[in-house]
Length: 51
Image 1: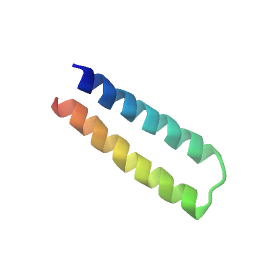
Image 2: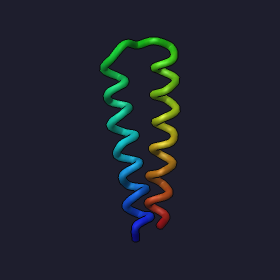
Image 3: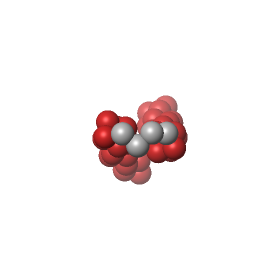
């Protein structure tokens, strides 16, 4: 049960960080970080769905 909450919290933090990074400067490194965080957040969300 604790693992489900940790995965859900990680997903929420990733999505929140994506929104924060999208409102700032649009540099190449920021876009790469946003893409990487989006992939990780989606992976955590699918993992949570499978539990």
